[in-house]
Length: 394
Image (tube, rainbow, N blue to C red):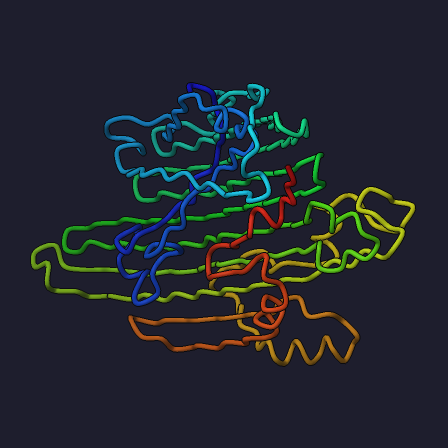
């Protein structure tokens, strides 16, 4: 209804023709064959949605237009509604949500070097959106409140010369969905680092194109169940941390004759892709709570949990060895009394269109997910049974 309800950073999908066609044979770019939907938590608008009034939900791309990013986005919005059987037969209403938005114009562009030979710019942007809403049961008088906080940052440095185009940056976001009423919280942190290098050269006889792409999609989710069961003394199985990373490093070179385009001198492509998944329950002992440092539990979720439970390390240049045999490392850590950091691992490498290396360690992910039916995982998306996580009661 004209109010900002949610924001998200777009993941930089690179399709098979992107940067250099030799990069993606046969390992294609991250998400290039299956882009998961962007999800916006509009729970604070439940009061409006249940009021019986007309609701219009619009999805769009900011800063777009003809010939820009918006012209290649195809948007098809779907609203996901989760039923609460315990609320059947009860009349519901709510207040208009409180919205605090820093706006989409917090962007800073800094010229680093601008000459006839080189143009280098740095661009930084950020945005914060907080939405708080209330749902009331007219029948019982109970009130349910929810808050969604979203933080976005983005930085990019681009260097352009007569032959080189280098772009390095990172997009980061954090969304925290919480309900003070039920105690449920869900924190999702997404990081998209990238480095793209394209070099084009041409002389009187040949055209030469070199491409190098290093980028990743890193996800980290902290889950805490809400509802009556979360208030019990033994709340094993209520807190979980799930992290997964898909990262690629690729370089390629294509050199051909200018007089005869079918006369190819060099056609080379080398790509490596690694996928890791980690999931762990967080034990909270009787008498402790998430909010009581005196109980020995750190409340700095983002810092302490990533330190104690490390996700895959930063991307390395392709010319450095980044292979490791997970079974050997798992055995070494077990010998040293360390917990495994990953419960699933896959690493692929391709050279000139053929897979040259493939190793998978299925680890312990399947049993861990099987023990809990309220969340599960496919390759790119964490699926959560929203109503069970939320613990809503009318």
